[in-house]
Image (cartoon, rainbow, N blue to C red):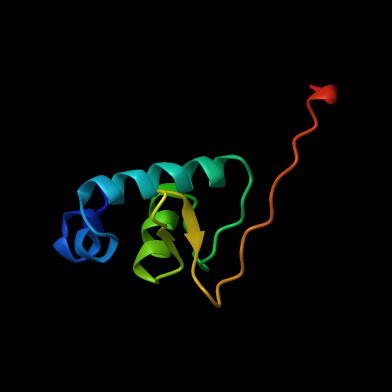
Length: 86
């Protein structure tokens, strides 16, 4: 398990456990769809990447529970998937 999730600081930063869970899940979907990480990290663990993005204030949930990229962070480009060649 990722040790940062045991700390209350990350829960308070996001605004509660439900919001933290939602933010992690939604960001993992983006990363799995091909979005680029917003932090420099040598890890291949996408969960750790998301935690690092939260801790470095790169992402947050807006009032409609959508993942938003913080001002000054480079927003990941949308990924287009061509299903014709599969």
